[in-house]
Image 1 (cartoon, helix red, strand yellow):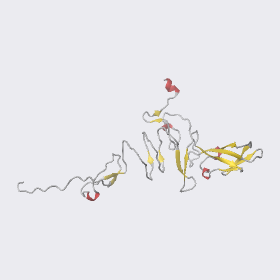
Image 2 (cartoon, helix red, strand yellow; image 1 turned 120 degrees about the vertical axis):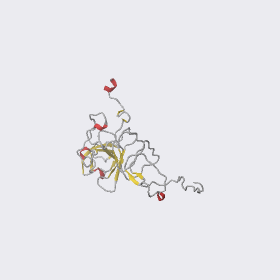
Image 3 (cartoon, rainbow, N blue to C red; image 1 turned 180 degrees about the vertical axis):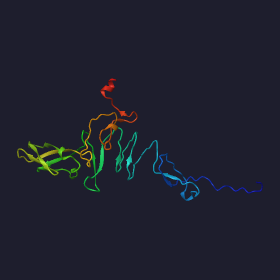
Image 4 (cartoon, rainbow, N blue to C red; image 1 turned 60 degrees about the horizontal axis):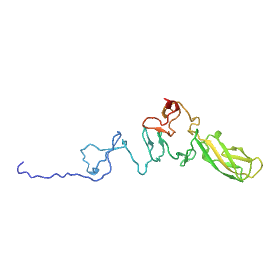
Length: 248
Protein backbone atom coordinates (compact mmCIF):
# COMPACT_ATOMS: atom_id res chain seq x y z
CA UNK A 1 0.00 0.00 0.00
CA UNK A 2 3.02 2.23 0.36
CA UNK A 3 3.10 5.05 -2.16
CA UNK A 4 -0.61 4.76 -3.12
CA UNK A 5 -2.75 7.88 -3.00
CA UNK A 6 -5.79 7.78 -0.67
CA UNK A 7 -9.00 8.78 -2.47
CA UNK A 8 -11.92 9.63 -0.14
CA UNK A 9 -15.25 7.94 -0.92
CA UNK A 10 -18.00 9.92 -2.60
CA UNK A 11 -20.77 8.54 -0.37
CA UNK A 12 -22.54 10.13 2.53
CA UNK A 13 -25.98 10.52 4.05
CA UNK A 14 -28.86 11.77 1.93
CA UNK A 15 -31.57 12.98 4.34
CA UNK A 16 -33.86 14.53 1.76
CA UNK A 17 -37.57 13.66 2.04
CA UNK A 18 -38.45 11.77 -1.15
CA UNK A 19 -41.83 10.32 -2.13
CA UNK A 20 -42.33 6.57 -1.88
CA UNK A 21 -41.73 4.53 -5.03
CA UNK A 22 -41.44 0.91 -6.07
CA UNK A 23 -43.50 -2.19 -6.76
CA UNK A 24 -46.78 -2.89 -4.90
CA UNK A 25 -46.44 -5.17 -1.87
CA UNK A 26 -49.48 -7.13 -0.66
CA UNK A 27 -48.15 -8.35 2.69
CA UNK A 28 -49.49 -6.82 5.90
CA UNK A 29 -46.40 -5.36 7.54
CA UNK A 30 -45.42 -2.12 9.20
CA UNK A 31 -45.03 0.91 6.96
CA UNK A 32 -41.47 1.88 5.98
CA UNK A 33 -40.66 5.31 4.58
CA UNK A 34 -37.39 5.30 2.66
CA UNK A 35 -35.35 8.40 1.83
CA UNK A 36 -33.65 7.42 -1.41
CA UNK A 37 -33.96 9.50 -4.56
CA UNK A 38 -35.64 7.19 -7.11
CA UNK A 39 -33.51 8.73 -9.90
CA UNK A 40 -30.36 7.60 -8.07
CA UNK A 41 -31.57 4.17 -6.98
CA UNK A 42 -28.95 1.58 -8.02
CA UNK A 43 -29.94 -0.46 -11.07
CA UNK A 44 -28.39 -3.59 -9.60
CA UNK A 45 -30.33 -3.38 -6.33
CA UNK A 46 -33.52 -5.31 -5.60
CA UNK A 47 -36.68 -3.36 -6.40
CA UNK A 48 -38.11 -1.41 -3.46
CA UNK A 49 -41.74 -1.96 -2.46
CA UNK A 50 -44.62 0.35 -1.72
CA UNK A 51 -47.41 -0.88 0.54
CA UNK A 52 -50.94 -1.23 -0.82
CA UNK A 53 -51.71 -3.08 2.41
CA UNK A 54 -50.26 -2.18 5.79
CA UNK A 55 -50.42 -2.92 9.49
CA UNK A 56 -50.38 -0.37 12.29
CA UNK A 57 -50.90 -0.61 16.05
CA UNK A 58 -52.18 2.89 16.73
CA UNK A 59 -53.66 5.38 14.28
CA UNK A 60 -54.61 8.96 15.06
CA UNK A 61 -56.60 10.96 12.49
CA UNK A 62 -56.47 14.69 13.19
CA UNK A 63 -58.30 15.91 10.11
CA UNK A 64 -60.11 13.68 7.60
CA UNK A 65 -60.11 10.31 5.91
CA UNK A 66 -60.36 10.97 2.18
CA UNK A 67 -60.74 8.56 -0.69
CA UNK A 68 -63.08 6.73 -3.03
CA UNK A 69 -62.69 3.21 -1.62
CA UNK A 70 -64.44 1.25 1.10
CA UNK A 71 -63.56 1.20 4.79
CA UNK A 72 -63.61 -2.41 5.97
CA UNK A 73 -62.99 -2.91 9.70
CA UNK A 74 -62.46 -6.46 10.90
CA UNK A 75 -61.86 -7.78 14.39
CA UNK A 76 -62.29 -5.70 17.51
CA UNK A 77 -60.99 -2.35 18.57
CA UNK A 78 -61.92 1.19 19.50
CA UNK A 79 -62.80 3.51 16.63
CA UNK A 80 -63.47 7.13 17.53
CA UNK A 81 -64.38 10.09 15.39
CA UNK A 82 -66.42 10.48 12.22
CA UNK A 83 -65.97 8.45 9.06
CA UNK A 84 -67.36 9.55 5.72
CA UNK A 85 -66.97 7.02 2.92
CA UNK A 86 -68.97 5.71 -0.04
CA UNK A 87 -69.69 2.47 1.84
CA UNK A 88 -68.91 1.08 5.27
CA UNK A 89 -68.62 -2.71 5.50
CA UNK A 90 -68.88 -4.52 8.82
CA UNK A 91 -70.23 -3.78 12.27
CA UNK A 92 -69.12 -0.98 14.54
CA UNK A 93 -68.58 -2.56 17.96
CA UNK A 94 -69.08 0.00 20.69
CA UNK A 95 -71.44 2.62 21.99
CA UNK A 96 -72.70 5.03 19.35
CA UNK A 97 -72.89 8.45 20.95
CA UNK A 98 -74.85 11.22 19.31
CA UNK A 99 -76.83 11.13 16.11
CA UNK A 100 -76.81 7.94 14.05
CA UNK A 101 -76.65 9.19 10.48
CA UNK A 102 -76.80 7.10 7.36
CA UNK A 103 -76.13 8.05 3.77
CA UNK A 104 -77.48 5.84 0.99
CA UNK A 105 -77.90 6.00 -2.79
CA UNK A 106 -81.27 7.24 -4.06
CA UNK A 107 -83.32 4.13 -4.78
CA UNK A 108 -84.81 5.51 -8.01
CA UNK A 109 -82.44 8.15 -9.44
CA UNK A 110 -78.77 7.73 -10.33
CA UNK A 111 -76.47 10.51 -9.22
CA UNK A 112 -78.52 11.32 -6.10
CA UNK A 113 -78.10 10.27 -2.48
CA UNK A 114 -80.22 10.46 0.69
CA UNK A 115 -78.89 11.32 4.16
CA UNK A 116 -81.11 10.84 7.23
CA UNK A 117 -80.69 10.59 10.97
CA UNK A 118 -81.88 7.31 12.48
CA UNK A 119 -84.64 7.19 15.07
CA UNK A 120 -84.35 4.37 17.62
CA UNK A 121 -87.00 1.67 17.82
CA UNK A 122 -87.86 -1.93 16.91
CA UNK A 123 -88.07 -1.10 13.21
CA UNK A 124 -86.21 0.93 10.63
CA UNK A 125 -88.60 3.82 11.16
CA UNK A 126 -88.73 6.80 8.82
CA UNK A 127 -90.95 9.86 9.20
CA UNK A 128 -92.08 13.19 7.79
CA UNK A 129 -93.98 15.92 9.63
CA UNK A 130 -95.35 19.33 8.88
CA UNK A 131 -98.37 21.64 8.89
CA UNK A 132 -101.53 21.25 6.79
CA UNK A 133 -103.82 24.27 6.24
CA UNK A 134 -106.68 24.91 3.81
CA UNK A 135 -105.94 21.60 2.06
CA UNK A 136 -106.96 17.98 2.45
CA UNK A 137 -103.96 16.10 1.03
CA UNK A 138 -100.41 15.45 2.18
CA UNK A 139 -97.84 14.48 -0.45
CA UNK A 140 -95.32 11.94 0.81
CA UNK A 141 -91.66 12.22 -0.29
CA UNK A 142 -91.19 10.76 -3.77
CA UNK A 143 -88.21 8.71 -2.59
CA UNK A 144 -90.43 6.75 -0.16
CA UNK A 145 -91.63 4.65 -3.09
CA UNK A 146 -89.54 1.48 -3.02
CA UNK A 147 -87.85 2.55 0.23
CA UNK A 148 -90.66 1.96 2.76
CA UNK A 149 -93.34 -0.67 3.28
CA UNK A 150 -96.61 1.14 2.37
CA UNK A 151 -98.61 -1.18 4.64
CA UNK A 152 -96.70 0.21 7.65
CA UNK A 153 -97.69 3.88 7.16
CA UNK A 154 -99.31 5.53 10.19
CA UNK A 155 -100.62 9.11 10.41
CA UNK A 156 -101.12 11.36 13.45
CA UNK A 157 -102.94 14.73 13.37
CA UNK A 158 -102.80 17.53 15.95
CA UNK A 159 -105.58 20.01 15.22
CA UNK A 160 -104.76 23.69 15.69
CA UNK A 161 -107.09 26.35 17.11
CA UNK A 162 -110.42 24.52 17.06
CA UNK A 163 -111.97 21.06 16.94
CA UNK A 164 -111.99 19.64 13.41
CA UNK A 165 -112.70 15.92 13.88
CA UNK A 166 -109.81 15.04 11.56
CA UNK A 167 -109.99 11.68 9.82
CA UNK A 168 -107.41 9.75 7.81
CA UNK A 169 -109.24 9.15 4.53
CA UNK A 170 -106.81 6.72 2.88
CA UNK A 171 -104.04 7.28 0.38
CA UNK A 172 -103.37 6.83 -3.30
CA UNK A 173 -99.85 6.58 -4.66
CA UNK A 174 -97.86 8.96 -2.48
CA UNK A 175 -100.81 11.18 -1.43
CA UNK A 176 -102.44 10.98 2.03
CA UNK A 177 -106.11 12.08 2.09
CA UNK A 178 -107.53 13.97 5.08
CA UNK A 179 -111.08 15.07 5.82
CA UNK A 180 -112.90 16.88 8.60
CA UNK A 181 -115.81 15.05 10.19
CA UNK A 182 -117.56 18.33 11.07
CA UNK A 183 -116.77 20.13 7.79
CA UNK A 184 -114.28 22.52 9.41
CA UNK A 185 -111.42 24.12 7.55
CA UNK A 186 -108.41 21.85 8.07
CA UNK A 187 -105.55 23.35 10.06
CA UNK A 188 -103.27 20.87 11.82
CA UNK A 189 -99.83 19.50 12.44
CA UNK A 190 -99.20 16.04 11.04
CA UNK A 191 -96.67 13.31 11.62
CA UNK A 192 -96.39 10.33 9.29
CA UNK A 193 -94.28 7.25 10.08
CA UNK A 194 -93.44 4.20 8.03
CA UNK A 195 -91.05 1.25 8.32
CA UNK A 196 -88.19 1.34 5.87
CA UNK A 197 -87.32 -1.95 4.24
CA UNK A 198 -84.23 -3.45 5.90
CA UNK A 199 -82.99 -4.18 2.39
CA UNK A 200 -84.89 -2.51 -0.52
CA UNK A 201 -83.61 -5.26 -2.83
CA UNK A 202 -85.03 -7.98 -0.54
CA UNK A 203 -88.37 -6.84 0.84
CA UNK A 204 -88.84 -10.11 2.76
CA UNK A 205 -85.91 -9.45 5.10
CA UNK A 206 -87.15 -8.66 8.62
CA UNK A 207 -85.57 -7.17 11.72
CA UNK A 208 -85.02 -9.65 14.57
CA UNK A 209 -85.51 -7.40 17.61
CA UNK A 210 -84.81 -10.05 20.28
CA UNK A 211 -82.75 -13.13 19.48
CA UNK A 212 -80.83 -15.92 21.23
CA UNK A 213 -77.09 -15.35 21.45
CA UNK A 214 -74.11 -14.25 23.48
CA UNK A 215 -72.59 -11.79 20.98
CA UNK A 216 -73.83 -9.73 18.00
CA UNK A 217 -72.31 -12.42 15.78
CA UNK A 218 -75.24 -14.66 16.80
CA UNK A 219 -77.78 -12.41 15.06
CA UNK A 220 -79.99 -14.74 12.97
CA UNK A 221 -80.36 -12.39 10.00
CA UNK A 222 -78.07 -10.45 7.70
CA UNK A 223 -75.48 -8.94 10.03
CA UNK A 224 -74.03 -6.44 7.53
CA UNK A 225 -76.54 -3.62 7.95
CA UNK A 226 -76.29 -2.86 11.65
CA UNK A 227 -74.34 -0.67 14.02
CA UNK A 228 -73.88 -2.62 17.24
CA UNK A 229 -73.96 -0.46 20.37
CA UNK A 230 -73.22 -1.13 24.03
CA UNK A 231 -70.40 -3.52 23.28
CA UNK A 232 -67.31 -4.11 25.41
CA UNK A 233 -64.41 -4.64 23.01
CA UNK A 234 -61.95 -6.09 25.49
CA UNK A 235 -64.14 -8.69 27.21
CA UNK A 236 -66.21 -9.53 24.12
CA UNK A 237 -69.46 -9.38 26.04
CA UNK A 238 -72.25 -6.90 26.57
CA UNK A 239 -71.45 -4.25 29.15
CA UNK A 240 -74.59 -4.96 31.18
CA UNK A 241 -75.42 -8.24 32.89
CA UNK A 242 -78.88 -9.72 32.93
CA UNK A 243 -80.55 -10.39 36.33
CA UNK A 244 -79.52 -14.07 36.31
CA UNK A 245 -75.87 -13.15 35.87
CA UNK A 246 -76.05 -10.54 38.63
CA UNK A 247 -77.47 -13.03 41.10
CA UNK A 248 -74.74 -15.53 40.34
